[in-house]
Length: 297
Figure (cartoon, rainbow, N blue to C red):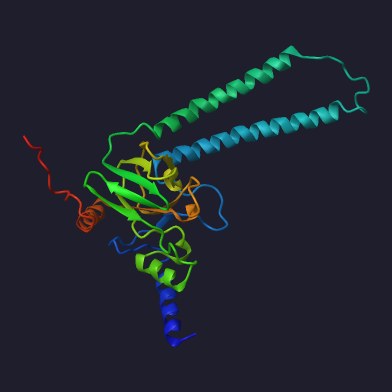
C-alpha cells in the first residue's frame, strides 16, 4: 500500500469513528443522534418517534397476546384429546357425525375475535389517512432509483441519491463520502446525499407519486409506509416528536437497483429547521419563507 493511500484510509476511519454517535453534514445540521436504523442482531421494531408508530406497536402487542392465547388453548385442547380419548383410555369411541353446540362455538368465537381485532386495528389504519391540519407539505416522487422531494410551501425541490450509488461496494471513496456527509460507515446503503429535513412536532403532509413504476416510501420509526404509484397522488402524514436521524427504504420491488434507494429524514428543532430552510431555498432556488406573493388583481 502506498503511503498516501495509507494516510487517506487512516483519516477516513478516524473521521467515521468520531461521527459514529452523532450526525453532522454538509447541510449544516450537527449533533443529531441516529435513532431509526436497523441494528445487527436485534429484533422487533425500531424506536417509535410518532403517534402512528406507537399505535402500530401497541396493536402488534395486543395481537400477539390474542394469538398466544389461541395457541395455548389449541395446544392444551390437543393434549387433553390425546390423553382422554386415546385407544387405551377410551376403547369404545363414541360415533356421531356432528355436534351443534361445538359447531356454533367454533363459528361464533372466531367472529367475535375478528370483531375485537377490527375495532382496534381499523381506527389505527384510518388515522394514517385522516390527515390533520398540516404545518407543511412535502411531495415525494419515486424514480428508478432515487427520490425527489418538493417542499411545495417554498417552491423548491431536490433529488436524493444513496451515498455511494454506482460504486462497486464500500470502497475507500465511499467511506470518505459518508464521512463528508456526516454518516458512520455502518450507515452505508442507508444514507443519502440530500436528506429530508423537518421540524420536530410539526405535522407533515406527504403526497406520494411515482414517475415510472410503483415505489413505496417507508420509515419504520415513523410508522409510515405508502406506495408511490405513477399517475396517482397518495397522501399520508407524520409528526415526529424526537429529534434525530431516521432511515428508511423503498419497500416495493421496483427494478434492479431497488435495494439502493434509501430514505433519510432529519428531525430538528424549529430554529435549526429555519436556518436549513433559508440555505435550501437559496441552494435550490425556492421561494424565501419571508416573502409573500400577492395575487394579481
